[in-house]
Image 1 (cartoon, helix red, strand yellow):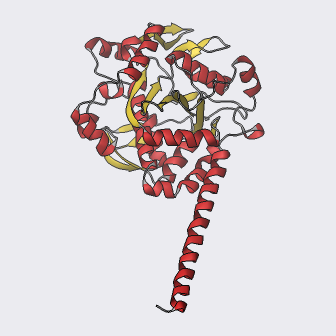
Image 2 (tube, one colour):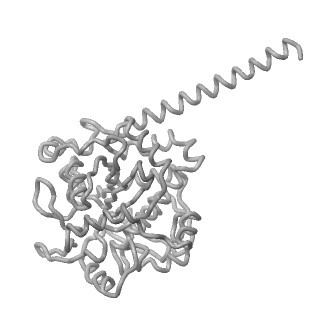
Image 3 (cartoon, helix red, strand yellow):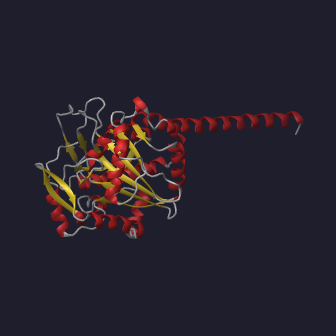
Length: 373
């Protein structure tokens, strides 16, 4: 090999190395900038009109030190029909709990009509807590579950649609025909899905997680939301999504607000990467659900708040044992298969098997007459 050939090879390698380094710098700087902009300040904050009052009435949550379990409140809101500057109620509320020691992730979906003490305010449905600000919402969710909630992530319908479209949609089995129309929003959010395996874009996915016009109402909907969140998390771990992460973040950034710092996100990402998904549950569970009429409206109550906190701790310490068939299904698609889909109105969306008395309670609690959101 001549010296000229060697110089040519080294020149080519140098160009390749510079290109790789340049791409890496661009990639990570783009991600950093997008993550840093997820936390909205001042006029850009969706809570600009309530934040000061929120912080006075409800102090900031405890800081996460990195070794103890961390809990994140995920809130999806429906902003239809609200005035500028108003904060809409939560359409869905979930708490993701990560344990960096046990390397486990748990997901809890909170029924939005659960009647609780709103810190600094009167008792109300828990989905109203966010209208007073994120600190109040985190405290209300934490008090219900008996755990500290350190962080929140807040988005609306458009943010959900953008996220699903940005990752290329989701393939899943729609367990039944789903149909609902509404003149209130000029049919923009009508629901029309057919039973069977489908590829859902953002708008179709929103229809799937919002549908509640079946025998189980919000109970089955909360189960669909948990299952769909697992599917999104799985899709985000794919090589394609990781490569497109700067673009994905850019598309969803305007619709998301959080109190997570970039450093917090990196630490959480590291914990999440090393952890296994341990399961998802409905809160409150069927056995602790009650029903009460407050001001002429039906709400869901917790029969024994202390027993609910114990229920949550039992899940952390002794998670339900899954059958081999359940493990096979979860590893295969992270979605209910055709067999489990036929059980949509049973245990798959209530965090466990259901007795006949639970079923009777379900029929009672679904007759709340709540307006579709």
